[in-house]
Amino acid sequence: MNTEVKQEWIEDLCLIDDTISVGGTSKKSIKAELASYKFELQRLRAENAKYRSQFDSAPISYFTIDRLLNIHGLNSAGRKLLRYSTDQKKYQPFIAHINSADHLKIQKHVNAVMAGNKATLRTSIISDGKSIPVMLHSTPTQVPGSPGFVCQTAMMDVSEEKAAVEQLQLANNSLHHTVYHDSLTGLPNRLFFNAKLNSSLLQIKNTDKKVALLLLDMDRFKQVNESLGHKVGDQLLKEVVRRLKGTIRQADAVARLGDDEFAVIVEQVDSLAEVSQIANQIIRKLAQPYRSGCQEIFTTASVGISIYPTDTIENDELIRFSHAAMTHAKSRGSNCVEFFNNKLISLKRRNFELESELRVALRESQFELYFQPQLSLANHKIVGFEALLRWNHPVRGQLSPESFIEIAERTGVIDALGEWILRDACQKLCKLREAGFDDIRISVNVSAKQFSAGDLQKKIATIIAETEIPAHMLELELTESALLVDATSSIDVLNELRATGIEFAIDDFGTGYSSFSRLRQLPLSRLKIDKSFIQGMPVNQDDNSIVKAIISVAHEMGMEVVSEGVETAAQLDFLRSLKCDIVQGYYISKPVEFGSVLAVLRAK
Ligand code: C2E
Ligand code: MG
Ligand code: MG
Image 1 (cartoon, rainbow, N blue to C red):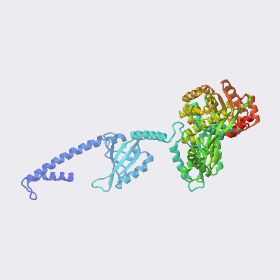
Image 2: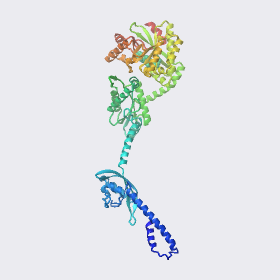
Image 3: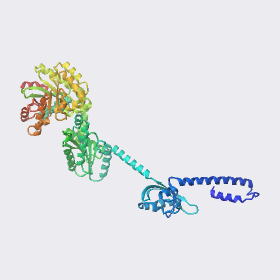
Image 4: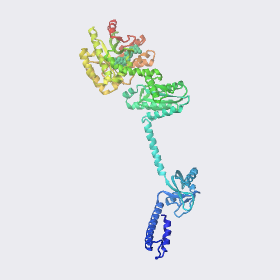
């Protein structure tokens, strides 16, 4: 029931004579009804006053805006915000309080409410010359007796909320940064890269442009990390990123996908020559020496490239193809650029097939050791042979260890294969002794995996006992990285084996990062200089100096020096002049089957 109507009734009823009955209702019952109305009226008045005081003391500004944008019924929060005193009853039009840039927005807001809609608006009011962000919630309200609506508005000061939102946005941004960026280098990470690649490919859809995906992997980064420590490794990566950023074009994107793996998305490509130029610039920049304290570090990068849409239109495949190209670049000797081509897929398939065939090969005796003689320059005699593994594949012919050792290591086949190699080498030593050559040594290459397996000492002891060869006839060749897998335990294993008489040589010296002071801790009898240094001699002065220095320091440390990869008389002569002890290489002999070993020994 409408309260105002009820009140009129009550006032009328008070005039009714006690004796009169209205419509058959007695005066008594009319009075009772009157009392209940009075009670209701008091309750409503109290409630009204309560609401009025709540309305006035509410922290939110309430007011009404009419069609001409005049303000009515401003509560005290509103007066405070709009700077009106308590006794002021006339207000400026609402628009006069609003930032002029938002006048049109305000007019639209009010119009929408006048048309019967609820509306919300973020704007700013000017209060004491300061701009305060506010939020308006307006509801259409009908005024009794007048047509249409007025705009009943609640206005909130949201400056604190805005500050909170800004803080939240900042936090969000930093969270976004953490999720999408790599913490070490600050570069976008794989997540970001995937999203970026998607958008780059979408952008050039239906155009005649291309996108090139360059995948970059640092060569021998693991060795840097293992030999010089992670701190130096991290510094190196940061420097790599600095150089990368300085090389790519501004529009291109670079991301870090893994430890030492980076991706560059080259957009809007017209020709392969353009991509090739960028990739070559990158590897040239990255190949320049890095400094860590007073030490110079040499490392390079291998780059694999695939092109969208030429090679594929699938994102995943594009990444796979670049990866295949990069792996191929590495197998070509690193520091080079390789574009994807379909042959690489067959290479991958080939590796996959080799993986399963390797297991069968050992059972079916498809492996064979070849032997490459080592010539002493002091007495011009063959003092030993390096045992080099060959796989006589029934279909593919003879395979070199470089095409399968890594697969054998990855699949664990190296355990059984390594044991077979050691046993076969010792059996061959046994045969040499029977033929009267008991001062010959056989060097066996031992991979890092065999070395870190933990049971190498036991296996060797069993084989030596079986074949009854003197332990000093067996030499194990280890690479610097094999020794660095677990540096402290490797010293223990080496010492234990050395105590039995077995000798050790460090292989491919110069390609890793071992310092001489580190080598000093190891019971090494020989140091083999990597063939990459020998091959530049005697023309390349740098190689000459490096080899000369290595020989002299190794001698100081009581080690003999073996130079591998000697291919010419000039190299041999030069090595002799540098007092190198032993030479090995095609100039002396290629690796030969065991059947020819006796002939080689007898010929010298
Ligand atoms: P490595 O131990 O440094 O062996 C020397 C490599 O250089 C051999 O390649 C040898 O054939 C080659 N070589 C020798 N003289 C010359 C030369 O004058 N010029 C050139 N250009 N090359 C020469 P190969 O037999 O293909 O072996 C490659 C690598 O595979 C070896 O390098 C060694 O790291 C690994 N490997 C070989 N046999 C075994 C093995 O039985 N077990 C393990 N774990 N790895 C092995
Ligand atoms: Mg070797
Ligand atoms: Mg070597």
